[in-house]
Image 1 (tube, rainbow, N blue to C red):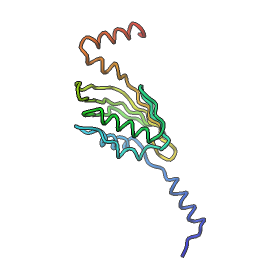
Image 2: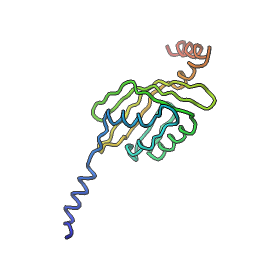
Image 3: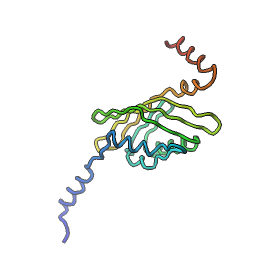
Length: 162
């Protein structure tokens, strides 16, 4: 027997309104699977949690759309020999999740470089990651590992902006 059209439409609307449950535990679980203890990162399991119209921004770039975000992640995977991330702390307030991290990047020709930063995620009403904003001092953390240059760089910043 055929279901009435109205019941089918209501069921469809209810299913589309089911909210994903993205919370601190979800983020800790997903990010722990993303960054291996050794080797290249794998983001494939995390991409379904991003909204198609998501926006990513960091100190280098602003990317709009999930497809371009996936391309950026794949480029980073190709460029690094190994990439690790340790989440130091994490908090949530309604639809905002913020976590502090230490990312260690190992490139093919340079020694490992720890980068200290934080990420702010905004969760959409339907439970997808709608915005991701990463905050970090890329050049400061890299320059700190170059003998003598790190001190000069910090002194320059202090003189100009401190």
